[in-house]
Each structure stands twice: as structure tokens, then as C-alpha cells.
Length: 184
Image (cartoon, rainbow, N blue to C red; front, side):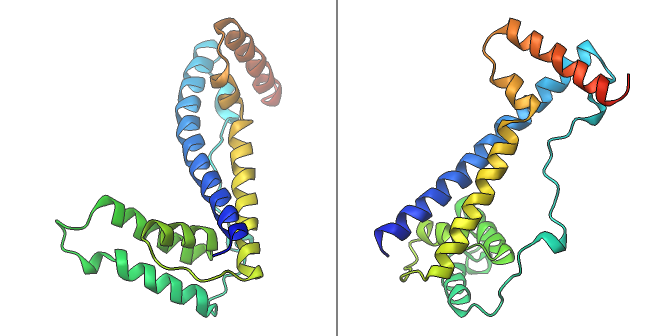
């Protein structure tokens, strides 16, 4: 695989892992933010939700089930981590996670995720074509948008503040916004 492709895959993996981290932080932040807001104004949070809405079928990019190169690589990786290959004692969490990610890659036609699993499992990957590279670039952009959405949420912004005075001022501003939104 050429250096440009490797860089694009590393960029994808970086953003995928960053999104996972941001989601974990955001979950904690939202819980603490809700508690803090509820102590100030119990009615203010009824409109708050940072949960990602599941994609409806029209929003999901068309899945190319005829991509023989994708299928071939998917099968090579699946052979290495499929649960039927191992007895329950041998089947590690790493293999289970790899298989789950592999399944998600197939469902979403996500070359980046497929290649991440292949790299994790030491599955040989041939040179990538422009359409495959473009798929990874597009998926990376989707990851960046999701990261931005989480990082700009009120809960995450509040959680990121280091000063208690600023946190309290921010809570007061948020309560005003929620009350205005709710018509109070």
C-alpha cells in the first residue's frame, strides 16, 4: 500500500478513535450537566438531547453489494475473527470486537473501518483504488462532523471549562436559553 493511502487510513482511524473518546466524555459531561442544570432549574432541560439520531434508510449512502474487492477483503478478515472458528474459551474480546467492527464496516460499506480491522488482524491489503480512497475520505469527513457536534454541545462545552465560576455563569446562560426556548 502506498504512503498516501496509509496516511488516509491513519487519519480515518484517528478520527474514529477520537469520536469514541468524545462520546465517552460527552456521556459523562451530559450526565453532570443535567444534574447541575436540574439543581438550578428542573424544567430547563426538557429540550436537551445530544444523542445521535439513527440514520433513516434514505440517509444511508447506497451500499454497493457488488464490490467484489470489498467482499473478498471482508471474507479474508472474517475468517480470522469469526466466532464459529473458536470455542467460547478461546474467543477473546479483541476477536469479538473485530468481528463486530467488521460487520459494521460491511453494513455501512465503510472501507476505512474494513481496513482498520484488516490492519488489526494482519490481513494483507492490496493497493487501493480512487473510489476506495474517496470512500475513506468521505467517512473521515462524517467522523469529523460528528466530533464537532459533540464538542460544541452545551454539556461538553460546560464540562470543558476549568473554572467553577465560569461553569456557574455558563449554567445560568444555558438556563436562560432553555427557558426562552420553552417559552418560560
